[in-house]
Image (tube, rainbow, N blue to C red):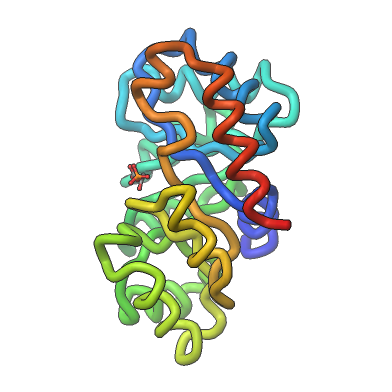
Length: 209
Ligand code: 3PG
């Protein structure tokens, strides 16, 4: 699990977090992200067409690594795996969700925001975590303070992260990548601004030299 999640986290410095309202936009959006250098993308299960969008990307976009975000329970985990998700992201972690994850080969990147939450996940074998909500929970200074006592845990901070804030996170010893919606927000997707999405993806991909 650790190796497979880490592969996703190291594919690029940023994992775009996406809310897709129209499945028809999924393929051109993912193509723009891949062209810009961001293959791993998190499509959140917050809209009715999210699973269809994941399937369309998995089936049609070469080079893309589609994942499902906002996965809260076994039913969503199973549906996300069936749709072709290569990884699963959750905003937090519950014993039930972790039990569910054990039934599937597709790895989970579970969310945590406190040292006790991180410790509970380490106890269950999770060393690659989402730090959520990053900015609101205390930002890079907070996350840095976890790096010495909880050195095994490496994070993808997500929540309030921007192109400007990403480098501070990426410089931390316990950060492998960051996540964020700024590359392809709802407006850019609705407006089919594929060139803008590609441009922001390229800038994000360049964050790691
Ligand atoms: C989310 O769950 O919406 C992600 O954390 C993205 O957060 P952001 O919109 O602040 O980048």
